[in-house]
Length: 224
Length: 224
Image 1 (cartoon, chains in turn yellow, orange):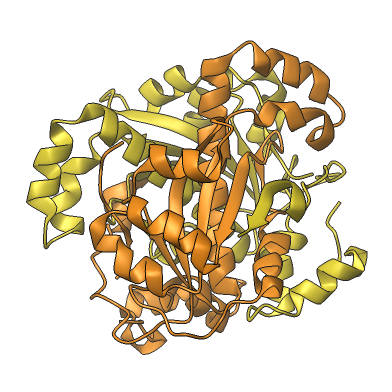
Image 2 (image 1 turned 120 degrees about the horizontal axis):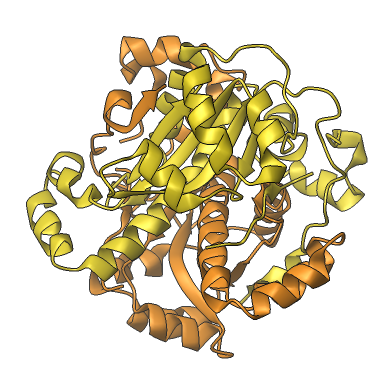
């Protein structure tokens, strides 16, 4: 994949900026309005970060929350390297797209989110009642395994971004990096593919672009 | 993909059931504890549903919340058919894996979550400052486009499942269905692939299996 695109989401939108119809729908939800804002409406993809550190406890807290969200057959194929030290940053930065280097350098922590293509080895642990059968079946079906791994890893990346926001931090997800090089540099066994790199921290100066338009409900959905 | 697996997540876990270390980490988050439970810890994949209907307003409210979460270049490739009428259910049920038919029949609404393989046509709308260039570039790169579409659709499916829970509803995501047949039956243009089918409603009788184990932080993550 050579598409050099960031996950954009680009000025925090206060509840007052919502269209009237959106505010009405927001009232339909059980989740409190401030939590809706924290996770979805006011949250934005940050393009700069402050110096405030992200602690090990915050990193752990994100994982201990989002680990509970569902994956196919509880397979949990996502693996994560958190890059924080200067030494690790120096290995990462040259492999990022040029347009992403300054912001990635400014982020207190950068998460490399990878799919474990051999996730099936863990099935006896994560899916006890049928894990060995599933492991052996997946071992012989590389194509089905890859599709299952990519899909569940995608879900887990979605959960992870929500988890970063739940920690009161800004996430800056990016797809603009040399995926093969980053994967081999940080997962040298050759069995992992880094899918998304996420800058994490408190927003810095001028952190947001204007938010891009979202598709309307009627453009994406039908009720039959 | 012929892997016939459900997204398992299987008894609601009250906060008191958390390991002590998990409760400590939960305090590190900005998101309120009850919201953490609603979306992640107490939420479970339901295997049966009550008769309580899911309203159009609830369906809209889910979308109007989760539409704000980020995708690659704001591409938003997810498309959704909500199956609620008896007529639509009758078209769907024979295409589900046998083990999924009873629960899917019992769900007040079933969401078919599909990726639009021609999502690039919308880039001028969703990514105004460079959308035409990106559309044309993606039009000539079917492989890169497919990878971008699958990844962002995966993220959006993750957001959607969290959105269903935000509405106070249980989600039952499944990968066990005839994907090609469901895609063609409900997206007859041949340009969409249904990736996940999600039962939605209030939980019914005996709705949960025991929860399967989650991988420990140290099994999936490293801090460098």
